Length: 251
Image 1 (cartoon, helix red, strand yellow):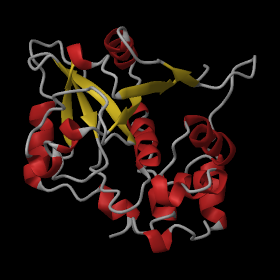
Image 2 (cartoon, one colour; image 1 turned 90 degrees about the vertical axis):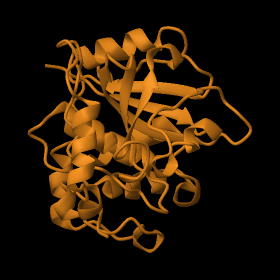
Image 3 (cartoon, helix red, strand yellow; image 1 turned 45 degrees about the horizontal axis):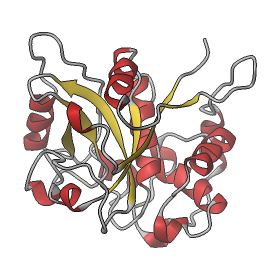
């Protein structure tokens, strides 16, 4: 299944679930657009998928993006990324800052290990250059750390209110994997445990009725509820939550 197709493989049942997750409750919910359900399959490209999801949600004028294009360059900067994923947000941002990210139809290879070394075309490279993030007058990066801990919930909510999705870095504990195959739609315990491995996802909204954030993952529509899951506000400071970021572009 190709990169662009895999992320558009949302059936009617999944769309119904996504609509329910983000439906307004007393007009107080925040819901940024989630256009695609991503399945990274055997490729540890979660950071690249989360970045593409955030960029698409932040600007509805952006076309579907090729997360594997970003992973191609990040893997060159981070030895072992093809096996273990991108475990360093500085490396991940460096690949984005230097190469951008192209439209999905210009780099539409499958999420599979054998496609990770496919050289991007000149048209893909040129398109991606147009999406290299700008810098402010001081040369500062728009990659804004929101940190983790007790105030995470407040910082995330403020970012979402500004229309900025949150790129979340977490540790996949046993409770996280309970959401596999739709067994549950919520991450119930956010403490780091012995099984923890780093993962990235995108926070795209809130559901006040559930008192939770809505998180878009990259494990396909069978994970959680249609590829998304809930993270309760009061669990946002758990030790399994490593870091979080937004992209704030200068005017």
